[in-house]
Image 1 (cartoon, rainbow, N blue to C red):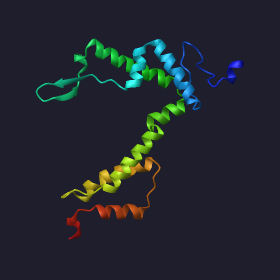
Image 2: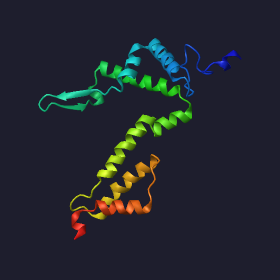
Image 3: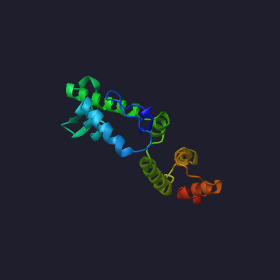
Length: 173
């Protein structure tokens, strides 16, 4: 059982990608690049360039819109297919707990960025003129729930004070 000493006990094959076990990311990344390029260089380009969305430019308004499936060219279909293959290969290499963590929470960088954005949004939150407290409650609760999901905690007193600070000036009369 010499294979048990390898950092990748499963997936050490030219036919199956290496399973990422959470360690030796740089090594795994190189192996994955080689594996994916061996299948098709277009798939690796999809990994490098991110998702491909077929779009169309409206000449009269210079607006860009997503192309309906019926209007896709063969090249559009091929590029989207590369994306799907890349996603399939990469998700196949993750342990199930890592797959679900990334799917539902995102990477640490994404979480940090999201937390920063939501914190800023929380600080800038104000009730719009003419908005009722009931109308304000929904986006406020939604924002607090998202921040709580990112491990931020709030005391009831803090939340109540925030609501009072956000009230429109008409509530002060």
